[in-house]
Amino acid sequence: MFDLLIKEKVRQPLLSREMLRGEVAHAKAATPSVAEVRKKLAEALKVEEGAVIVQSIVDHFGSQKAGLVAYVYDSNEDALKYASKVALARNQPTRGKNEKAGESQAAVVEQPTKKK
Image 1 (tube, rainbow, N blue to C red):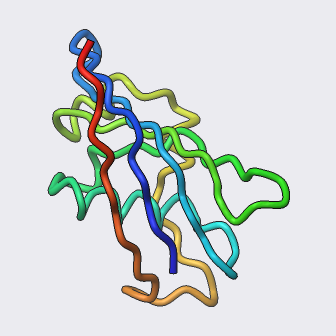
Image 2 (cartoon, rainbow, N blue to C red):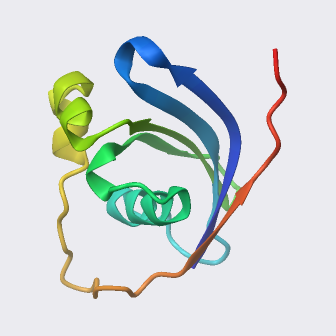
């Protein structure tokens, strides 16, 4: 089980996307996979899973938190058009031998963003 905390949202209209920065808290568990984080972000933001690209999940040494950078595109077509080939390959749905559909549970908390 893991929790997502969205700390910052930045709209990038030229690329038809929104950049999200946040944290993944995974108490007493391994760092969640890109597929798990992508699925939970899509559910929380009520967008199609194909429009969400997880750019990076970086662990903080000695902590049970990881940094998160993800992009939410306006449509699946925009994601295919603007996301890098490496990011698209990393976000392909794969199912591990121990992973079952609907196995992980997560809560998403969104912090209020500061308007500039």
